[in-house]
Image (cartoon, rainbow, N blue to C red; front, side):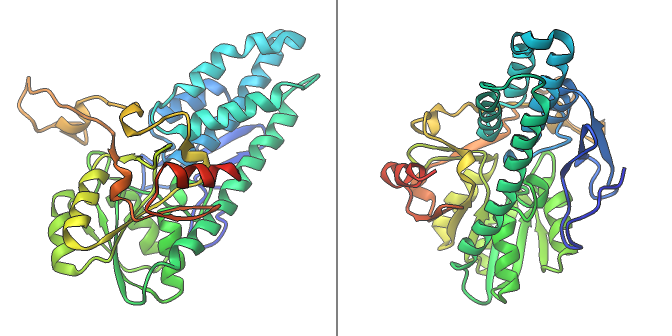
Length: 351
């Protein structure tokens, strides 16, 4: 199914059409743009686990629509006792991916929205999910403007993984900043890391930026420190999957190493994340659960094994960057320089 784009330079990673959630299958990009239909909550859980949809904000929005489908199914099974019927589906959605807190946040928000409902719950919950969807897009544009104000004219920047329109409701977090800074004439060049093992930088970020007319060069993950030194990178700009109460940031594996390299080479680190990514219940990065995926994501490429038989692989999907390595944390509520516990609490107080 073809879902119309909001504008020629970006994409819709997810959309509600009729009575189902349609997801752009990001595993097929950039070769093919194909949307798949998720008409049940279990289909949404499967799509999240299999990385049809990825990126913390997009996962949260998908989870919200999954809650709508779960409520509809529970009503069809149990009528007025639907709340008892949907508990297992709610848990399955919440647990589909453990590190990105946006998913649990969206599920909890839909649960609260369901608390006082009488009659069929799906219409009211759909309106709430669509509200979350719209709020995320507005937040991305706000963060883009705030973050772009830090970028000096002629800057060379680096980004990791994909924190663009594909990972959000549209526009992007880290790539939203890059889009707006480029529109202001401040971006000379973007280096995108390939981001092993799923190659989100190679497949997704370079695709998004090139179609938006933003000059992007792809680099291997291992060449990032050299590129910072040789090419005069001013900023490393990334998204986040969870921000702890003290400002520690969980993001795609490799972000921590980039932050260390940035500190060594005079580049600054900007993390761009909506408030839904913040987890005040988690004191620091050591308490953030780090998802691990199957080792064959590392030992094989395109289904072909290239590591010796019997060799095992350690495949953490995220790492934690300490707040001390983050120069600016950009949210829709404002930009926080040198984030710490007090600054995070002040941001969240107005949420």
